[in-house]
Amino acid sequence: MAKVNIRMAARLRRQARVRKKVLGTGARPRLCVFRSAANIYAQAIDDEKGITLAAVSTLTPALKDSLKGLKKADAARAVGRAVAEVLKEKGCLSVVFDRNGFLYHGRVKALSDGAREGGLDF
Image (cartoon, rainbow, N blue to C red; front, side):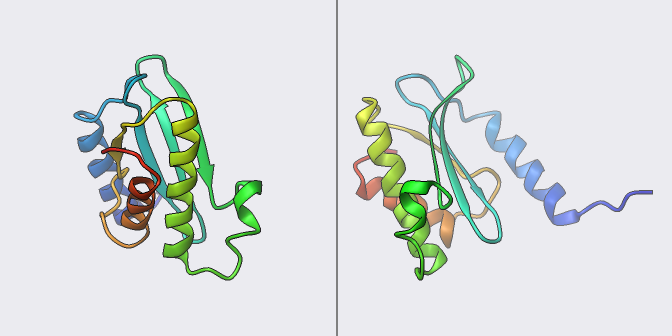
């Protein structure tokens, strides 16, 4: 029998609870964050059409070289600024933040702060 990862199951429950309430539109997309052990990813999603408007991560070629040697929280802040730039080019100045079941501190908070610094309104 497969063993259940209790921490992952708890995060998925929190994620489902938030997703019931948070919905992204074309004018105000959902800024979804995923945090792995080594990297952080951010996507702006229009849930009405089911499309991703923008996606930036620490693995994005434009950012990857500039993030070498930075702490993970500083890299997350840079990813937040980069996703804000991409969204501003597409005309989206306001987003709904989806922490994806992760606690709002550390790298997740740094990414949202970077997005705010980049000019996005939450």
